[in-house]
Amino acid sequence: MSRAVIYETFGGPEVLQVREVPQPHAGPGEVRVRVTAAALNPMDWILSSAPEWAEQFGITMPSGFGHDFAGVVDEVGAGATGCAVGDRVYGGALGQAVADFVVVTPPTQVPEGPSLSRTPVLLSRTPTGISDEVASTLAVAGGTAAAALAAIGLRSGDTVLIGGAAGGVGVFAVQLAKLAGAHVIGTASQSTFDFLRQLGAEPVAYGAGLADRVRALAPGGVTAATDLFGTETAETALALGVPPERISTIAAGPNPPGGVRATGGADAAPDALQRITDAILAGTITVPIAATFPLEQTRDAVTLAAERHVHGKIVITL
Ligand SMILES: NC(=O)c1ccc[n+]([C@@H]2O[C@H](COP(=O)([O-])OP(=O)(O)OC[C@H]3O[C@@H](n4cnc5c(N)ncnc54)[C@H](OP(=O)(O)O)[C@@H]3O)[C@@H](O)[C@H]2O)c1
Image 1 (tube, rainbow, N blue to C red):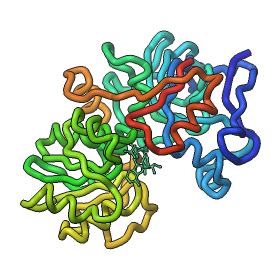
Image 2: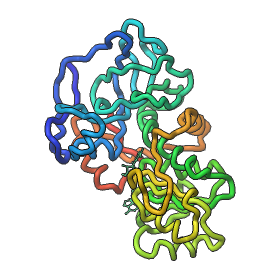
Image 3: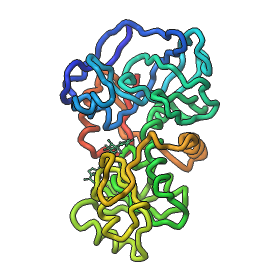
Image 4: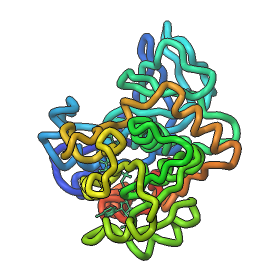
C-alpha cells in the first residue's frame, strides 16, 4: 500500500483526505516516481474547491491532489525511454503529486538538463546540487515567472513593477528580473518589505494609492510591469503610461483589462527551467521555502497557503 491525498467532494482543506491506496505501477511507456517533495500552487486548492475549474481541467472524482513534485524514478515500464531507475527527476502531473508515487508518461526523451515540455506531463532531471524540495517548486512557479517576464520582453535597463512579488511566482520573477538587469519595484504588504529587499526588489505597498507611491519611487517612470496577483498592478501600470504590450498578468483570466498580455506557465520557453536551475546552482537565484509539512498535514499546508500571504513556496515532504 502507499499514501495519497485525495478528495471526493469539492470544498476547503477539509475535503483533503490522506488515504492508503494500492501502490500504482508503471505500465507500458510509463515511469513511476517515488515522490519526496510536492510544492503547492493556488491552482491545487482552486481545483479541489471549484467544480467549474475542475471540469475545465478534466478532473473527475475521486481525484488526487497537487501538481508539482520531485523524487526518484523507481519503476520503468516496458518501452519507456529517457529515464532509468534511480534518476532524480522533478516535474508536474495534474491531480497526482501529493502521494508516495506518481506514474507518468515521460516526454519521449527526458532532457539531460531540465526543460519545460508543453505536454501535460512535465518531467526533467534534477541537477546535482539542487535539493528535491527546491526542485519541486520549479515547474509551475519558475516556468510561470519566466513566461510573465518574457511576455513583456523584459530587458536590461527596464524599471519593472511586479505585483504580488513575494509569492511563489513572485520570488522567481523578482530574481529573474534582477538577473536580466532590471530595476525591480515589487508590491507587498508592509511586513513583507524586508523579505523583498533581500531578494533585490524595492518594495511598495499594494492597495489604494499604488500609482502615487510608485511614481514617488520611480520618478523616471516605469517601463514594464507584470501582475502576479490580479489586476491592480496591471491597471496601475496602464495609469502610469506603460504600454499594454509591456504589461503581463498571470492571474486575471484570458482577457485582462486594457489589452495587457495574459500569460502563464504553458508559455514558458523550452529553456526557462534550465536558466533557473543554472542560476540556482550559480547562487544567483535562491528559492525561499516558507514552510514544509509532512503529507499527513496537507490540510494545514493548504490552509496556510490559501491565506495568500506566504513568502516563497510551501512544500509537502514525503
Ligand atoms: N497562469 C498560470 O500559469 C499561473 C501559474 C501560477 C500561478 N498563477 C496564479 O498567479 C497567482 C500567484 O500565484 P502564487 O503562487 O505566486 O501565489 P501566492 O504564493 O499565494 O502569493 C502570495 C503573495 O501574494 C501577496 N499578496 C496578497 N494579497 C495581495 C494583494 N492584494 N495584492 C498584491 N499581492 C498580494 C502576498 O504578499 P503579502 O504577504 O505581503 O501580503 C504573498 O506574498 C495566483 O492567482 C495563481 O493562481 C497562474
